[in-house]
Length: 115
Length: 117
Image 1 (cartoon, rainbow over the protein chains, first blue to last red):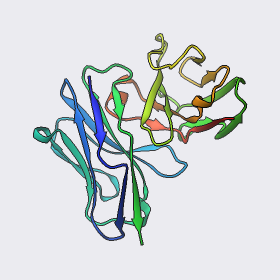
Image 2 (cartoon, rainbow over the protein chains, first blue to last red):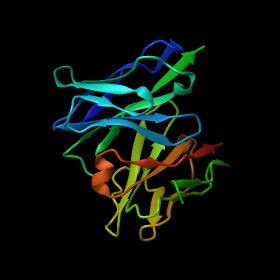
Image 3 (cartoon, rainbow over the protein chains, first blue to last red):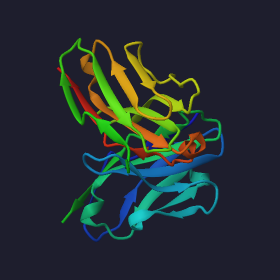
Image 4 (cartoon, helix red, strand yellow):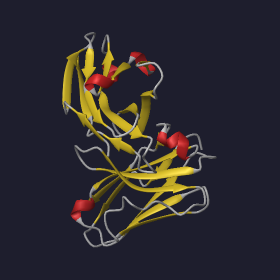
């Protein structure tokens, strides 16, 4: 069985300051991990993914995430927030034992950017 | 089309009515997924189609829910005798194939927001 926990339902930061969105996972297999972003009234878009290669993964729009097996974490970071980053972010885990429903989505973190 | 297209974007219906939601995947994508997104919740898997194989219906919450897909094209999600608890955004996604899907390479539509009064 696999699960994913996004530790914050809402995160608010000022424009130009760092962003940290936290995600912890559990998986019975070697997991793949993803972050998706959903802007208002838009579909989800893949931001970045980890699939057992480099533990530090770079994504679009300056975001990156680090896979830490010892901490079962895959936190999403960005050095400097931009107003356009305001959106809902979903952490997703997929393990090799999964079938069609092998993707498990977190409940999402709403990122608010203060001017 | 260039992306996954869903219709209607918004649907308001009365309790007990049937609704149909449509998804037009990216051309050439053999895998198609339906998810439900309730307010403040993560995505809940509903059903998955892969090519001409029998669909994986393991996520459908009740027998009021059904879905069809013709070949590798359009899919329709039908909810019969809608209940207020069915109110949610229904998201469709497609991927090149099932492996791409498990690799996270899903392309999502903008969703159909269903409100049951």
